[in-house]
Image (tube, rainbow, N blue to C red; front, side, top):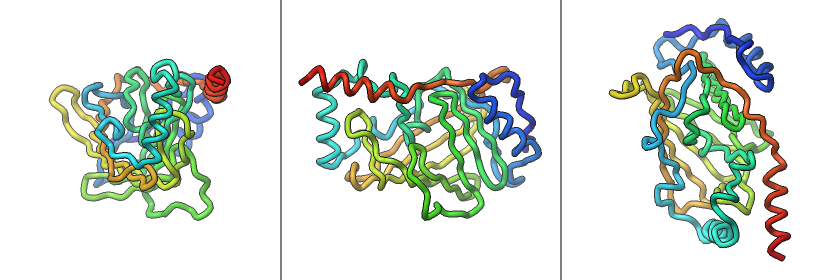
Length: 248
């Protein structure tokens, strides 16, 4: 069991400084449950080849979702017009299956919750471990509302309350989406201690059947801290508008 100590906030970039101070104060004396795996620490993608996104694994799309994707593929360049180049957050499940190898993720854990800070896109997630359910008045978001439960040494996380994706783009998701993750601490022969995460994406408006993905995180070197990404969230809207106006 590892103590979740005070964060070295002086090393953080300004955008994340307030978050670092807040989480250090909240979790400074916190511990993970003594009989459960402790995922706390700074992590990074272990290997590009170990990561699979659900939409790369031969997903079976509904007719409407397929039409949206075909429109994007016919009218936009998937490299030049990738929303990620314009700081558009994909949200879950893409957040957890990102291949952004140079951007670390920090995890804080106690008995009641897990908080994740992602340098990539300045994302953050909270996973509630105290048995609560999603509040009735919760406003959908790109990361959704996550609740976790333990099945032995495996942490099972269910995320709902997700926003629908922009109708123009390479990623499709409706507000009916549900993402289920299974986290395990695994000793890997090449990377040492890892978090091995399987992902199942369900979305009746987008997928005819569940689609699966995977992420493997390894521990980052001790000197690595989570900095800031500093996105301008209006960039993609301006880019889409200019493309559509140019085609008229």
